[in-house]
Length: 200
Image: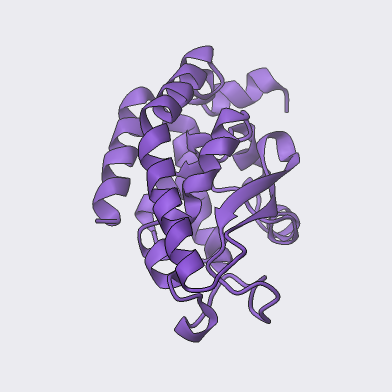
């Protein structure tokens, strides 16, 4: 299917792939740069007090057009821990501040760098790890269409099911495709406001 055909099927792509949308992403980066890095700086100092030396890490994900890239996150699981590559963890698996950082999504703050680099947007389908991505492409019709847009830090599927895991991709897919069809400045504003409400 050509890009034109995809755009007819998912009308929101005209907005998502516009320079206007990129400008909004950069404006949000500018507005949130100091607050987010201030919080990250405080979190880093506190983790040093707890004896944690490894603060940030990168993980491979699949992004726009099915291209792999490295997503940045704050470490919440001990390095080399047996569950470090899993998506669900017990409290015993987490670092001292791990639960707090995840509860308030501070572990996602470094992805502002991915937005600046043009690898992500503030809003879009969450980027998946290669193993789950290729499995879902094989098992779920339409899953590959998610990659027509930049992946996002938050998104329509995330606010519909904020506690979803990698195993819930089938349930999340209709919400991601809905976003591709209806993406707009108004819907993005709703997603941002509801994201803030969910994590209060």
